[in-house]
Length: 307
Length: 295
Image (cartoon, rainbow over all chains, first blue to last red; front, side, top):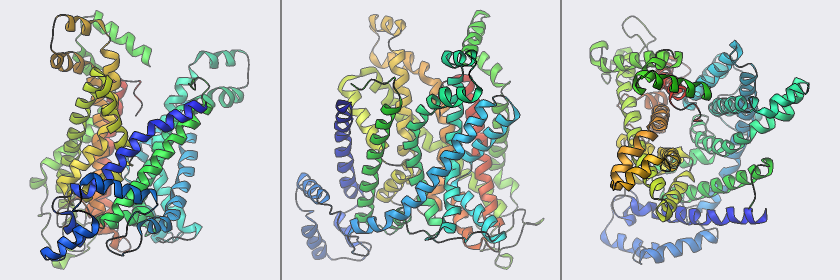
């Protein structure tokens, strides 16, 4: 078991190193001179450019720059924003709770909705309930979150006045963005749960359980659901990634001060250190979450051998 | 479902029916394929005939007719600059379909190629490619696309490239998995024993056998790419004003949500209908071609 965990962590190391190299090189991939990028769109003299190059260490060999960058990163220093001059790590840390609040709320909603709808559809396979549930799921994955968000504001805020249209900091301001964000993932999840459940319902052990005369409830909850949810756990990581990606859109629409909205602003304002730092932060968190999910997977699926 | 379709395929083969004919016959019985194809064909016809069907130019501004509701003159109303939304929705479809098709072409061609050589050659090449794919998968795809656009610059061409790169891993994974199982089959060994060069084996013997999942993933991929492309334009890093683009139209209409619901409703409906049609078609194709594929 411990060996499995150690192996999984070791496997992630090359990925993480490649991610850092890629993020480090981001600046060098931009067309034109990195020093000019640092100076922004302002007009600059050759002397200024030269000074920036020396300050940023851009005149040194690339591998040296990378090692220097990594040593900073390992000390928790992601540089300073080109626009506000605040440290990037502080900026990320003050923004992240707002994004976590939104994504976790959405994750909860989409899991309840997705697993519920998927189960319902599978248990009432080939009935009108199945068709309706799957129509909802299809609608979920076909309506872009930026449009459903606008529709939600239009309906629940402008017309009905139930919730404030934008902002953050209270529960009623969380409802609309969290639901809008949850629908896409709920749709994908419902489809996954349904097909996984249908597969398990046809397994011999479920037929055996039924023929033993076990009550339908025991068959569903003890024998089917637990096994059907195993593959679903693997896509929870993916769901989380989608939610963080979707937060970029919902935070922008609902004017929430999360990391997603900050990221878009940084891209638009060409704040490269902030883009670089946030990209690295999100990628590393995502890698860690996926490792966590792989480990959960091992715990809940007895068929997987640890070594 | 799976057993049934295997049996059916066998029956068709015994009857001497070709795979393509069998596919067409089953496609014509699938409600998903029928509805999906109908919706998608309608969208394509409307979009292709945009210059003929739309009474106005999509970027022409009628200063006196700002934010007018839907009427007999302006079917979908006008936006804050007095532009005809019906015309903008039709022309916007050209951009979205283009973004969908080009991004998916980049992703599926690149991803298939990597998946084929990764699965066929194995060893260090496989490890190298799979590590690269892991790196791409370490970013949520919208964020990766945003990062790529940040590096390359904000315009529609870079959006297509970014969405293509961000969605490439799924093709590589699917094709690699199929290649691994196909390459062990006897006829590949036979081809190799006869001295067929690797490229010939890859493209003439393996590729045709991994096409089914590629077709299914690509179809749903177009839907995803249309949503992602419009998302980037919505965020201001894709199509730039005054281009009629669905995502951009939604973001420009957000400001007028209180007074003019039609500005955001019609472009949103257009995205939904298009994506719904493609997804239905994709679901239908999956049931016929590769029922075990979970996407």
